[in-house]
Length: 241
Ligand code: NDP
Image 1 (tube, helix red, strand yellow):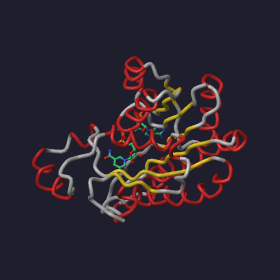
Image 2 (cartoon, protein in one colour):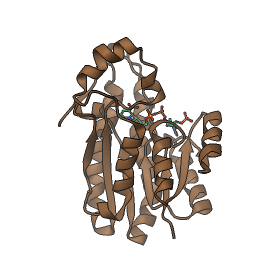
Image 3 (cartoon, protein in one colour):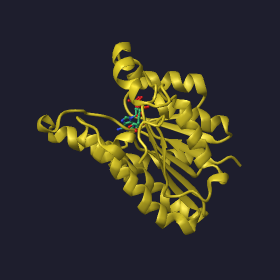
Image 4 (cartoon, helix red, strand yellow):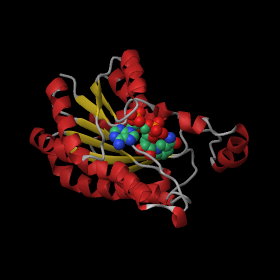
């Protein structure tokens, strides 16, 4: 029987590419989202992937959401923690609200989502948790103290949990994308793109969401069973930690 994968923030951007690639690779896939019903409906229509709405920063909502997905599709074998937000501000202007919102959504969600799938993965002796972090969690980024801290926290979470899952057939890995051509990045003016962004990227172009998705498909597979606690960079050579 096909394994089941759940992708948080799976209805648009990188998450949508991941959900589609996992489906194409033969998995049963569920996509979570939070607020954009219209986008979720068109994604479901286009892909036939079921969508589930809850806020990953809410612990109880995540427990309920996981229960619902498991009732409808079966036990979750692969969890992709992709949902993430930014609330950028220079630190001297950053509010507590901006700090907490980003930490709870990007990092708190890793606890909220991984905890309810963990016991089942341990019992079944198989699991894959794949966390979508960021280049900015590795190098830090001006105006993103909250985001950089949350994304660096994801890497610590990954390494610690990987050690706990290792003897139970569960791998836990992180991917750190650089600039990926999502709608947000495509909205950057061409001049800024040509003069400021592209010169930072040795490969000379943005990454595509599908390029991140293909890494996820590999990490989810049996072939990647010896890879755990890893951070895979996908940034066109922009940063080499
Ligand atoms: P998008 O903004 O395009 O999509 C974000 C997705 O996450 C949406 O489906 C959104 O749902 C969902 N989401 C946001 N908040 C919540 C929440 N509280 N609960 C549930 N779902 C939520 O993001 P990207 O595709 O650009 O980014 C995906 C991941 O990749 C993020 O973790 C981001 O930090 C990381 N990343 C992105 C890079 C890039 O260049 N784009 C570079 C490096 C890392 P809804 O549609 O309902 O709002």
